Structures are given as structure tokens and as C-alpha cells.
Length: 490
Image 1 (tube, helix red, strand yellow):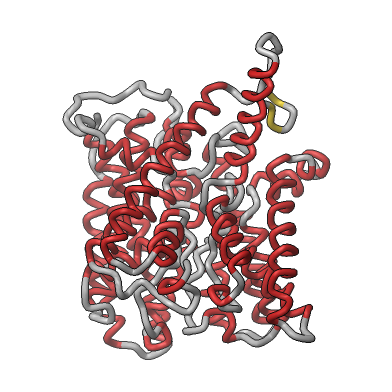
Image 2 (image 1 turned 45 degrees about the vertical axis):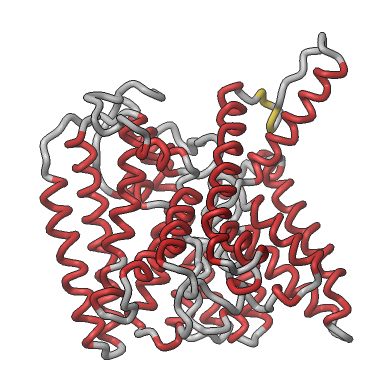
């Protein structure tokens, strides 16, 4: 492995992170928070200096798939470490493991929190905390490909993007990966701005609208009020956020098709149809199930149902109602929807709708082969044959997913918090959702867990956001001592 090129790109990531922290300084100045300002200055200076030095390293400008995985995994770990510094230096979160947990939760757009009183946090830290969602939603490497003039040729752009992008395959909107990244980020920025303007027009304060839009766009869900979105009693505000949560769970290539007037191709997409079918179907079933709790207010029941389904399916984690108090059917339905997650190519987490559809089709295909062994049966998606390598990767992902889930549940079970809390805490962190059930429900938090459990769940967040394989590759025995891992996956 080319250690120098890994170090160089880690330097780029550190530089970008240092620059991304600068707006928080102005927020601290605006709200008159000198202590927070003092915390940000060293937190910005350290990655900027370190990043500048590393980015100046001389190295060949080619990146193999293996090196792309290592850069992605190590980059997110480094980014989370430096991103935690403002919380730790300010002593607003005294223990570093809690700072780490909160920051990893932010960058991975999970939204799980250890804070018991978020409204006591300074505005500068609240801004940075929510902005980590926006950075992590689309990915810092995708941002680098879109903005920073990096290397050229030999497929290294694709190797970086594939390591960070969610889903069973990585689609290209344009032939050049850098153009794909730019278009994707412009759509991402545009939707964020539109939501922010709508929320301001609907009466939400500007600061609240900005950080809420960050959380919605990144499908992260960090709220700045102790009761999340329920603080804003306006039904218009709540439904605007719900709609945008659902929109950010859609594959961004669909929006490009709509912008380029490929309307038929966009609405013919199988994953898109399944995505909305699951969301609308889940909303109706849960809405009916919770109706007895909403006497003479059926409209509110279905509004809360839609908001909760959109929130957990896109793995955002915002809340307007405490679904932990809903009937068993609704609670378990939400847990299943949490695991399915959003669309590939979106900012949402979970297994992804496309993977679930592929696995169902693969199962049906195998059943047909068992009934009629001589019949040729292949898996198709959007009318095109799915390559065997994609199906192998999908089944391997599910295998790794289940193994990590089981191990994580067993480790967290030593806390003795009961099955609902233990299982839902792992589901919430591994699928990058945020809230779970019981102790970690919509009105709870993760502060009562031991430092080791918080570390395990932080790793689960990273595994979930990076879709397992980049982290496992980086941790594989011998990766770092080999002279070369080039050529793999190219």
C-alpha cells in the first residue's frame, strides 16, 4: 500500500474539516460566546496545519480500490477525532468518549446523542454539531471530488467515490466522476436551501431553520430542542420537514433525471416505486393502528405516523411524537422500516431499499430454479440484468451485517438494560437512525451506557455509514504491512 498517498488524502480531509469549522466561529461571535470561540480556535488550527503539511507530500497520483477503502475509513475516523475537539476543549462535554460518540453520530448522520439537555449547549457548538450532518450526509470525499482539483485519470476518482457512496452499486450521472460529484452536491445544496427558505417563511427562526435543514438534508436528526421537532407546534413546519426527509431519502440520480426532463425514466425506477410503497404503506398501517390513541383527531394520527415513518425510513431521527408509547405493532413496524432504510445514492442509511428488492428477487429466482432446474432464471432491476458480482456483494453485505449486528447486541447486552433497549440501540446506531426504544427512545438518550458500549456503538455507526467493507478492509490483517494492495477491485 502506498502510505504516502493515503497520508496525502487524509491531509486534504483535515484541511476541508478545518475550513468547515470556520462558520462556527462566526456563529459564536454573533451570539457572544467567547468560551466557545476559544475552543474552536485550536480545534481549527490543528487540522489546518496538519492537513496542509500532509497534503504537500509528493506521491504518484493514482489510487487503487484498496487504498480508496483505507483513505475513506481512516479519513472518517480522523475527521471524527478532530471534529470532537470543540466539544472537549470547551468542556461542554467533559469526557472524550462522549465527545467522540456525539461527533461520530453527527458525521455518520446517526443522530444518537448523549446530551441530556441540548438547549444548554452554546449556539456555536450547536451549529457545528448540526453541520456535521450536512458534511457527512453526502460525504467529505465526494465533496473533495466535486470541489478540490485532485488527481486525474486511472480511475482513482471512482475508487474514492465507490468507497464512500451508499448502495450495492455506484452510478455515474456523468461520464466523469468529478462532474457527477459536482452535480450531486449542487442538487444537495439546492434542496437544503429550499427547505431552509420554506421554514423561515413558515415562521421558524433563521438559526433554527438552518440547523434543522442541515439535519434533514443529511438525514441526521440532531435537534436543538429537547423535544426535537415537537417544539415547533406549527403543523406546516412539521409537514415541511417530513416531506423533505422523504425527499432526501430518494436516490439523487432521480432528481438529475427530472432536471434533464427524463421524466419517464425517473418514475420507472423500481427502487423509487418500492421506496414510496413502503413509506406510504407503513404510514397507513401505523396510522390505523394508533388511531385509538388520537380520539377525534384522525388527521393528527396520520400526520404523526407519516412523520415517524419518514424519519426512521430515511434514518433521520427527528420526532414529533413519542412512538415508544405506541402499540406493539407500530413499534415493531418502525423497527423493521429502520432496518430497510432509504434508497441507494441518497443521504439515508439502513440496508437500502435496492438491496432488499434484490434479495427478494434473488430468493424468487432461486425458488423458480428449484421448481424447474432447466429454466434460465435471472435477476433483473429496471429491466436490466443484475451482474452476478452485484448479487454476490449484496449477499456478502447481508452476511456481514447480520454477524456484526449479533456481536454488537451480545456486547451491549452486558449493560443489562433489557432486550428492547439493547436491540434497538444497536439497530439505531448501526443503521444510522438515532432514536430506538425504551431507554434510547425518542425522549431518551445514550448517556447511561458505559464508555466501552459507547465505543462499540460508535464503531457500529461508522460501519453503517461506510457500508461495512471499507472498515473491515482497513482492519484486515496484513493490509498495512503489505508493500502493495494495488490492482484490487480496479
